[in-house]
Image (cartoon, rainbow, N blue to C red):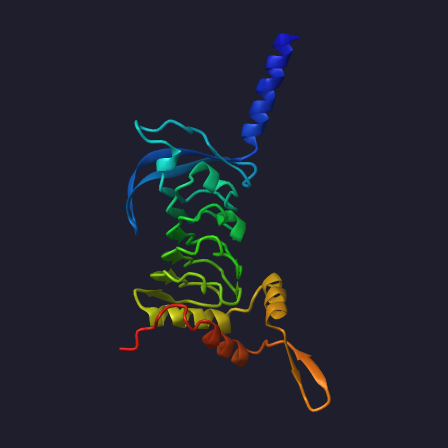
Length: 251
């Protein structure tokens, strides 16, 4: 009976560990936009269920490092169609996350929920089509965002508004926008404007935006309700709502 129980436990453990995005880390120092950082260079071993991240050599750090010391996760030329939801549990102090040319197909804010220290987010050369309006609500300290070489054709209104420390945004080579900007507040503001006027929101973002922006006005004896949706109105709203985003250099 004891032997059978041990066998069942081994099978259960194997099944649980197989049901994940499994990567093997090559732990080393790497230069990021925010400086030199102890980094996991990840090689994908299996991606049965990408909701969960499993590090095959978890704990095998050079002394005295551990997962809390990992400030960067770098994956390139691998097959990762979705980012796991628990990256922040594995690496609680992550500053940089990069997944370059990995067949990513979608982004959700929940993927970054526990990554509140993130400064560098890069997912270039993937297959991303939608940029949700609330994508960066948990990562408001981001300074560098790389989304170039995707297929973005939809973006939520004011998706970049919360990023008040933004230094660089790269969106070249996308469907509805092809622009980059760095170290220039006016250029970053211009990209925000291009996203608002040239990239229609996804259905979920549209519903959320129109609900939030519904306004009521009265004529002499009639009440009307309307939703703002035209490009001209969106441009005006963008200018109004981004006042105070960050002081624009007028010199």
